Image (tube, rainbow, N blue to C red; front, side, top):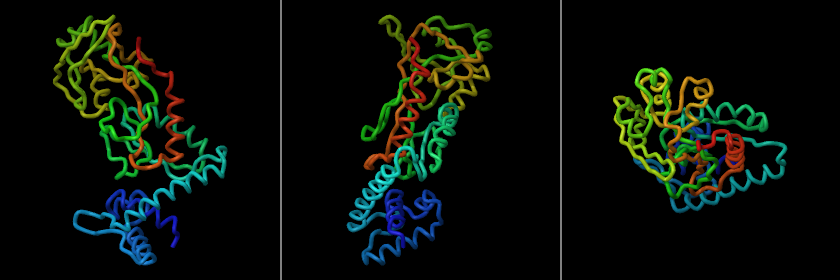
Length: 298
């Protein structure tokens, strides 16, 4: 039995809490995972996992083995990368999670270049607007925008972007253009259900807040885009959300002389793990690609 493979399998099982989840992450069948753990326990002659109706948890010996195995795997990966040299590129599989719209517009188009620079690398992209558990999903790096709800997360700020009020020229021609934030109360607004519907603006030291009402609420940014592009009303979003439409004129910023708080893009890494070389290098790649492209509006 390959010891490195056995360590990888045990680490995945402990972090996911099940054979089936570990198998999905390792791209093998569940019987193969069960067999590997059984062989490992047989070789060590000690029980590593407690099996119950609630899942799998490590025994005391299993927890010690898990911690040492995880550190050994990370050190081996770092040593291999260092020995092969930076010019040889990264290898293995990098699992990246990101919000659907942001990834579609700004991350996936970057992947060909990153893969060309690292021909031995594979990338799994998990698209979800919700915050997902990085450990249980086996995520190496998550790209998140806005405030981070988990203060214990290992995170690196990559770049700040702007926020604006957006609408199509067709909607504005029909409903009129708001001149001050208070005018938004009289407009149809598309509400992003993951954020507050009270919007705060600043201009020359003046703060203006308005609570908007809308007949349409959406739970994902892709729905927000679609509703705006269907001329259904105004919305607030990151400038990253409407880059193609802003360039083509299909969407306009309104209240451009009023500022909204900027939005940060973060690279978030699983807590309790050493950040892998693959994740670090991908974060730096995204940071370099995004920096300066869409700065906050003055």
